Length: 495
Image (tube, rainbow, N blue to C red; front, side):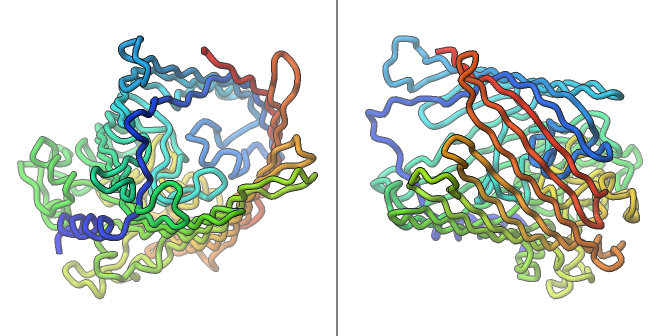
C-alpha cells in the first residue's frame, strides 16, 4: 500500500481510538502564558566536553565543548485585539530569546525563539522560531520524543495549529483534538545538501473530558525534508524534486513526482526524506496521582505498515503525585522509558517485499546524507547522535549523518523537593549501542549518562533563582566526562 493510503489508515485508526480534552465554555477568557527572564550561567568539565545531559534536549543552546559562560534573555508578550475586549478572543504576540555562549575559542549568539504570532481562541498562526514538543511523551524529565525531542534549535517555519486540545463540536467535550500544519527551511551551509525545505504536521485525538478518570490518546506526526540540492542520487544539476506538484507528493507521502529532476530513486521511493511516529497513550487519574502510559511506533520507509518494525519505538510510563505532605525529601514525579531501535525491519531490504523490507537506517537518507539534523544536532531523540559526537573512537558510516542508530536505552527521570525549599531533578540513562547494519560497532558498547540538578529561590533583588547541576558520562560511546553548571536567573513580568 502506498504511504498516502498508510496515512489515511492511521488517521482512521486514531480517529477511532483517540481521546480528548474538553474545550472551555463560550464564556472563557483566553489567556497566554509567557516567560520573561534573564540568566547567567557557567559550565565546566574535566576534559573540555560538556556532559550529555547538560547539552541534550536544550534546543541547541548549550555547546558540546567547554568551559564556557552563557548569558540568556527571553522576552514574550501578547496583546488583545481590540484592546478593549474582555475575553481576549483575538491576540497578537511577539517573542524573542537570545543565548550568548562565550568560551576561549568560540563566541556565538543563537536565537532559540524569534516569532510573531496571531492567536484566535485556542488557535495560533506564527512565523519564525518557537520551542515545541511533538509526540505523546513526557517533555520534562523524559529522554525526548523519537522524532522531535527539543535537542536542536527550532527550525524556522510558518505554523498553523492549536495551542491545546480543542473540543470537537457536538461531542459535549468528550472528544477533542490537537493538530498543526507547518512548512519551513533548513539552515544554509549544511555539509551536503543546500536549500533544503521542511514540512511537518501532526494530529492527535483524546477521548475523555478533562476531569475524566480515564483518557485515551492517539495520533501521528509526520516530518519531511525535501527540495534543495544534493550530490547524491539526483539529476545532473544536483537538484532534488521541487515545485508545487512535488510539494503535494511530499505532503501526502505518495510515490512518484513530476519534472526533469525526478530520478529512479525518486520514482521508486517518494519525494523527500520522511519520518515520524504513530503514538498511543492512556492516562489514569487517581485520588493521589496521575498515571500516563505511552508508546511511540516509529516509521521511516514503510516497514511499519508490514509490521516488521513493531518492536522499535519509545515505551514510557510517568507517575505524577497530586499531593505534597511537606516532607524534607519528596519525589513528586517519576518517568521510566525504554527506547529500542535495533530492529529496523532486519538487515535485508528487497523493494516490494514486505517480509524483507529492512535497513530502515533511522535518521539517515541516501539523498539527504546530512540526515535528520539541524546545525549538526539530531532533531529527534538525542540517543541517535551525529557521527561527529562519536567518531573519536568508532568508525564513520560512509558520509551519513549518524553512525549509531541501533540503540537500546533504559531511562529514569525523577523530580521532587528537598527541605521544602529546594527543587531537584535527575536523569539517568543507560544504553547499548550497535552502530548501523552496514557499519556495526564491535561488541555493542554501553554508555551511562546521568544528571542531578537543583534550584532554589533567593529573597534577593526581588527574587532570584539559584541553579546548579552535576552530570557525568561513563562508558564506551562518549569520552568519560564529569561536568558542573552554576547559574542565577531573574524572572519578571511586563504586567
